Length: 284
Image (cartoon, rainbow, N blue to C red):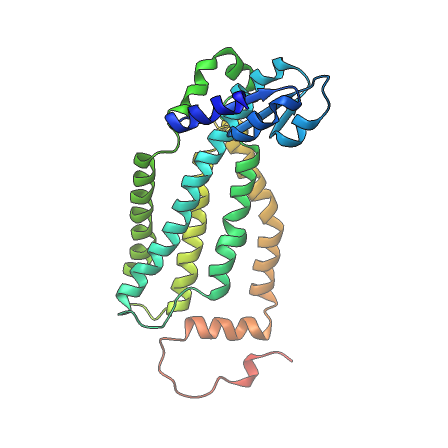
């Protein structure tokens, strides 16, 4: 109980998180009172294991647990917390500008399915992958420079200043997403649903690009080389050539009735309505 009392005293007198390490049954209360409890394998049974957050075979494993995995998890969690606020804010602010321009009517330009899938699939899956796999520094570097662990203690990656900057960024991006398409199509006959599709597409691409800018590992090692951009362009071109050639040949030389009607709808919209389209234009 004396060990647990020391932990309680530190928690009450300071704002710091506490970590307790024990190897026996008499350390259970201390481990339970600490914010993080670690059990070292000992000769006194496994009571401490059941009460601890982490269990390890030897004391030396504590160094990589704190300096490596502690830093990685702090960086991931801090990045993901700010990013989740950001991605939801961009979407909500875009809808907010739309509501202002429709006088708070019940009309909507973004479908319910798009709203649901935005948070469930479009932006959630990249967030999960980055939150699990991203590493800002290698294990070797973190062990070589233990002072890097202080970034988490000082809250360098998650603080009020970064939160405010992230919200300001989301407001600016939502303004760009809403007003650029709005000003471009305000005198056209494009309906609100079509512009809404453009808005949701722009939001999804923009927030995922923003997430990609915060990824530290893997791709940025190769993006600095010309081979990467050549391969990316070559893959896109080679992959689309057969599909593009087939589509162009079909629409030019063997168009379907639907394609003929689509072309008439597209190119004859501005002509005055005179009579029905001749049935001879369609194939049977």
